[in-house]
Structures are given as C-alpha cells and as structure tokens.
Amino acid sequence: MNTTHPVVAKKLATMLLEIGAVKLSPQKPFTWASGWLSPIYCDNRMVLSFPAIRSFIKDSFVELIKTQYPDTEVIAGVATAGVPHGALVADALNLPFIYVRPKPKEHGMGNLIEGKIEEGKKVLLIEDLISTGGSSLKAAQAVQQAGMPVIGMAAIFTYGFEVAQQAFQQANIPFSTLSNYNALLVEAVANDYITEEEMASLQEWRGNPAEWKGR
Image (cartoon, rainbow, N blue to C red):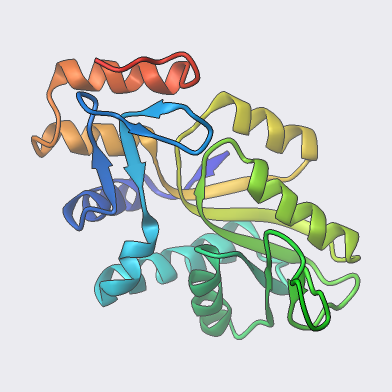
C-alpha cells in the first residue's frame, strides 16, 4: 500500500475530522454490519457536500494517478461511494468512466458494470474507503473478468488492516490511498478530538478489530 505525500494525508485527515466525515468514539463504539465493535465511523460521502474538500480530493487523486498509475486508460468507480469521485477524476483526466455495481442489476440488461467495456484497456479503480478489502477486490475481479486489466486501486482512506494488505497482495493488485488511519490518529490527538489514552485504545482496535471490546 502506498500513501500520497504526508502533507496530503495530514491535510485530508484534518478535513475529514472537521466536517464529521470521521467520528471517533472509543468510549461508545459503533457496531459494524460484520458485528465488530469499532471506535471509528468513516462516511466519506460527507465530503461531496463541501466543494473545497471535494476538489482537494479530486486534485489529489489526479496527481496520484499521474505519478503512480500513468498508464491508466479507464477510471472505474466502485459503487456506491466511489462513483462520484471516480466520475470527477475521469473528467479531470479526460478519460472514459465506468462503474461497478455490488451485484448485477436486477432488471433491464442485468449489468454488473455500467459504461462501455473495452477489453484490454487498463483500469484504475476509485474507492472511498478500504476496510478489509473484500468489496473492493470483488469489484476489481468483475472488471478483470470483463477482459480489462486492473492496474491498481486508489482510495480516499484506509484503516490499514493487515487482512486488507494481504488480500491485495494475493490478488496482485497495488493500491494507494490519500490518507490513512495513522495520519488520522496523529491529527485527532493534535486537535484534541481524542486523548493520548484513547489513542492507545484506537491503536489496539486496529491491531485486532474482531476481538476489540472497547473501553
């Protein structure tokens, strides 16, 4: 996993905290659909309502793609939250755009991928968030099965779970993020969103989220 310049990671972490896209609550943890207790809730859909942040993310993605994935020929958004960011990036780079549904459409053509499929074209996927990597890699597999090589995935944020790192390595798909959990915790402490003690609990959660019981 690669992260863009530390200045970008730091600035974006601060933005996400300021607008409430990321909420930290180690004392009263959230419950994920998986049943995991989590001291963090990340909703990057929030950034779409803030033009300056939305543009910062778009511009950061564009720079990342130009430097790390210069061979990109098609941008693919991962539904649903990766779709608007992917469309903005594709427009900025003047590249074709497609998006991948979580499951085939239940009527009409029954499409799993929306947009023009061009076999052999190199695809860069855009995600909003990488947690375990499961849904992201499912989307990548759908693109590959359609005959389009996936050269990488770029996301706004990652929790940095080891299981995700391993999953992407096994799939042989590199991924990059604009910001990450480590940068977020540093900014959260520096700006008094959490205490040093709470930071320790948050770090413990990231090490073993399935077993973490909160504080």
